[in-house]
Length: 234
Image 1: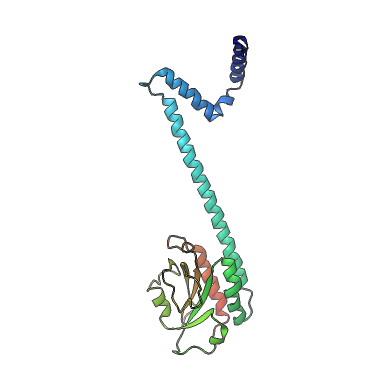
Image 2 (image 1 turned 45 degrees about the horizontal axis):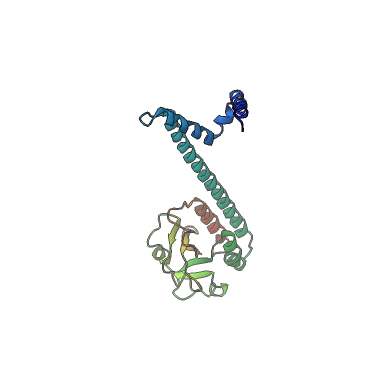
């Protein structure tokens, strides 16, 4: 490029920028390059407040964008969780007999909730296994009075308990072929004068159920579940 051509190109570029300054303002890399040249001309002992302010604004913008992405991701997760619980609740309202209800627990409900195990524990007054419950399969387990309190380690204040599992209980998980990493324990109240129950949802993933997670959706699920189950209990 000849000096004359270079001068003409600079003149054209200057004219474009003068007429359309946002071309530069909307290009962060161009602004940084201009400020860097400006800093060099000012010397090392002079602080350019505009450059400092711009760097801080860029950092704040980056943090805001990251926060925004996190909020959006959390909103999608909450929406997906709500839809998952709603699908499971619609499914538990379908069975018309106790056997169908228990089959649904061990099959469709497990799939919808994306868990690995489900166990319905019902406290009974008899010491021996209840003959009415024994033929109904491994999903439902009769247990002596006080089992729910013992299994939850007296933690009866909350309807839902989320926790990691280091050693699966052989009564709750007798057929588990691989270690259970976490579980959700849903207390079931069938009304005055009745013994309590417990719905245990087990997952191989140790992080699927954590004490740090919220329990609102599972509390709602437990409330509807126990009301649906009351139809079949005498």
